[in-house]
Length: 585
Image (cartoon, rainbow, N blue to C red; front, side):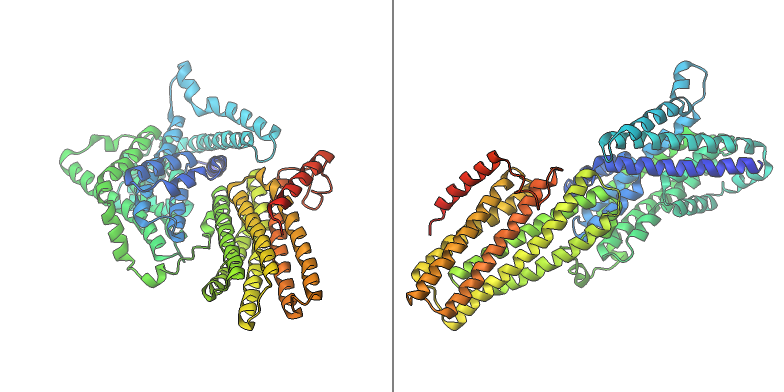
């Protein structure tokens, strides 16, 4: 094997790893976070969790990615440890699909059908289709994702073929044959397999490299079996690294992954080599091929899952014994925070941000409702609750805003980019709304402490205005949480009504002041309340307009009303007049 063969081997390995990365990322991107959402929600039954873990891993072509995702779920409190164990088992089964795909490179034969099954025959066609789809498709479209998947697969297979071709001459190399013979020692073979997989952090990739080496015909099954066993242990390094700095339950999830593979490997090795002492398996001396490696890889992972599935709860207990429980730490899980591990899965990270933004909207809704109730009848407990909720809203804004800034540097779809823009604009508006809710309860407290009272007419007017603000709150939050863009069109007319009501209340107050029915001191408090209620409706209007204009490239939020057509303006005015009748002063 000369220097040119070595260069071909390195180049083939680079293409192989790059193709696997491109294909996996594109598959994940095309799924758009849906697979991860299914994992999050449908894991109550362990058998279903196993099937889901296998399915998701088979689709995204990475058991490491699935396991890291599970660690993130557990760390965030989204998933319980008992649910995670099934997905981890399934991930080991799903990862075997890659070895079967790679085994196609080992197909030999002269018939037409066998030639068509060889990657060297169909990969160029897939690459051609992939490059056309990638170049002619719009940015972040499904067609482009499909094109990148095909390109990634073609590059992967080309790299595999290149590696296989570059090492083909090693069959007659005494040094290589001697090295392979040394690896037939079960312990040494396991260590090599584990180390290689730990370095490249992908069992699928390390299995592919082993399959390429088998093209030499100098690698017997006696060597491949312990290396494959070691690869299953080495792949646990990724999840263990991911759990560093996480909660204890997240670390336990990583330990379950390690224990599953470690126990499965120990049992397999003890049983297999004990039987070999008496039965002397003759196939161990036969040269391994790509399909044979896929068979061994599948038999081990499926067999380990079947064997250890009834003891899933024991794996959880073993992990809990290894990492003792600590109620203080687990109670420290922040329900607002989003685990940064999800940044590597941008589509799902964006879905989590949408969920958190909806949670924020609900908190703001509750805050406004409590604030309006204190205007009607002051309650110290409601005052304290609003103060507490306002702090929570501030934290939502800080955490979501910072997370979205980090997420913005990732490769996200056009739809997710639009959602990100909406959330970033909305969270600042929600935060300002909570500030004004706080202002309202402070005005209510001032009225209560100073023994001030609104006149009967003023109290009635405030009640009507409060109802309008209550309605705009519910309408906007519902539109935001449920993506009701058409319904959001009704927010702005209601906001205009709030402005009109506030104006009339101020005019009526001046009249009452002139007639001696109200005091100047009460007027100052009333002014604070009216300003706060107007600002609340203004910020809800901002959110609604942002929703409406987000998907329309012709307008922006500042030009939205200026670009109304005569027909739109007429419809707007009609709705505004009807709403005024609904809130008579």
